[in-house]
Length: 122
Image (cartoon, rainbow, N blue to C red; front, side):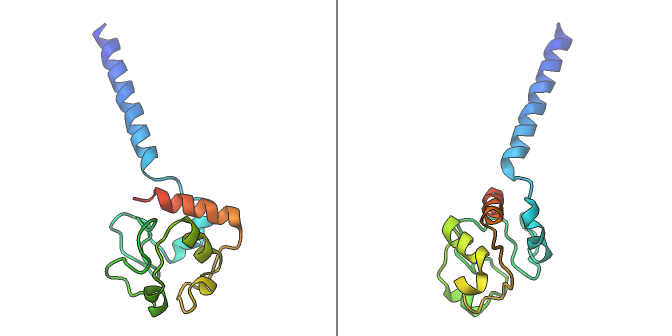
């Protein structure tokens, strides 16, 4: 009887660990592959050519300490919510003329997947 109880506790602990891991961050969508060339997403990870995107959702644009943002992005007064992320990812240089981000993601479904992923990074 004791073995069954121990096995049940181990099973419950494993399920809880799995739920905890899956609740923290999603698997990056395929569309995020191009983003990885310039951006890191690891908590407390170093920025690359572009700033670390961990925790980007909800924070003011150009606010990650230690990253050298363009003057245009610093002056943008954006806060990264769903709408501003969508517009910026669609056409960065149109949303913020003078930004250093050279490419956008024209496909709305791919942008939505990227935004959902970014919102999961905390």
